[in-house]
Image: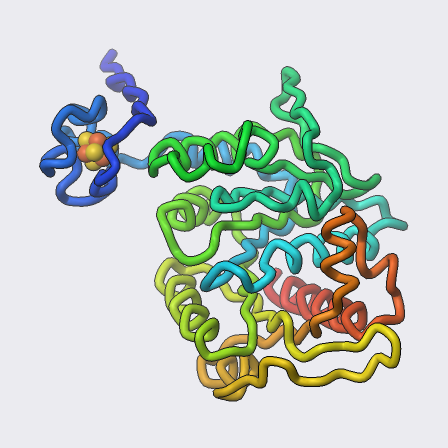
Length: 324
Ligand code: SF4
């Protein structure tokens, strides 16, 4: 009986200028000299379908909706929006006791432990995998931030090491049954995005939410993000315009602080034929809630920003209902 040759494990310690294991130059480029993976890459084995894709598919079959949170660039409030959307979804499903999970793979700055007020928590491992940290009865978080002794450690990680951790998170976190899993990714489009799409698409990726600010400098990068999603076949749930005008916490009047020079995200969405999910005004209380690990929509139910979040949640539900 013939036996499949055993797949060799890739080392995660690779040279800085690794051309990428799926590139034509894998194992052959000058950067590959001395890399512990050179034989595997040169033989093409590293470019074979990864058996973990099937394991992840099986592991995540109890997760109903899987959503990526993307942003074209840093500093647009992606993790804040991810955190508050998660709180809003958890509040929506609280009475039905349906669970919401959040996976933070933003290796550039995993800030969700702070947004959820659980920084410094220790991850526990059991026979069925890594247990996420519960933020609320029906809201749990797994973050790269729980594994880093300090944020500086993130920047020295290179492709395969980061991708190995992402794979481990998708394969080993014991979510049990989830209504939604939101995955907070690093800004831009990088190796991590390609990996997560490669692993999640076969498991049924519901789609992506892209976060931006109204200025053209952000929208330029969002256009690239939309093109990336279309190229890799990820459905776009829609675009959220964050920091869109200032909502005075006292009088509730909104004023434009950063006027959208080219019409803002809504116009861009029309031009690129994608859904516009809504605009969230700047409200200093949102930042305060994130610093204190609180749910903004619970603390300030009558604020214009809460209404904006609720509108976004109903548009997400509408997308999910029509895509099933
Ligand atoms: S992992 Fe493969 S492609 Fe990357 S440097 Fe090593 S041998 Fe080259």
